[in-house]
Length: 262
Image 1 (cartoon, one colour):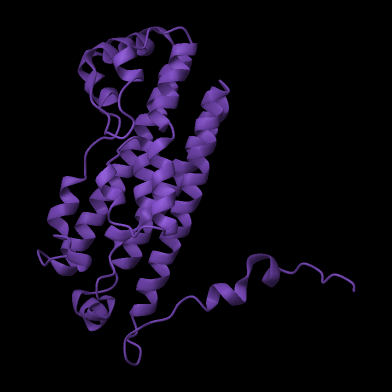
Image 2 (cartoon, rainbow, N blue to C red; image 1 turned 180 degrees about the vertical axis):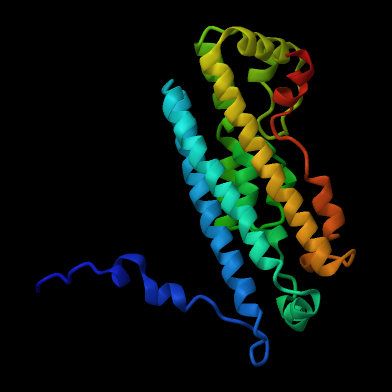
């Protein structure tokens, strides 16, 4: 039997894609479709960012710093799109959101395993975060893998070591399941990179851009939540904007700590 020609529809699975937006409200409420589309698109972008950051780690391992910069530029551009999507979501008023919010039940962005994976890849890790996902689930299995594999920050430090810098053992042997702890000894190395090595100082700056881009998205997300539900608890049992504010912190603290020394 002759194989069917690949079409736009078959290649992109358009029929399956368009069947995935299923509002739960009666009617349904007009704005629920927007809410679903925005969050499904977020998950697709999270998938792409993870794909790109895995590539960045592989390029660092191969000492291909120029291609690292190119790939990070792509990630930074995607982060700008994520922020812009919040502008669209904010066209929905608090009353419009309340019209279907109860239908979300316990569903919450707090449960996005891909965003947790992104945090793990960058180096902000917590074994407790895995416990929020059911045993045997795809999400839990993916997070377990991310917890055990080298972070982007670790790959960067190994790269600097191969470039001839005396990266302290305390930074290279840190527990990978814990969040990154600032290291004064490492900061001394990074200051030297900035003052003597144009190529690698530029790479450091792209990592700062990445860190700032994630913080920008987190901040705008907090403001969107405050604008939409105020101080009400979030869905899924979280404290809402109060919890989200605690997450706005650098993931690469050493690169921020050295600013006063440059």
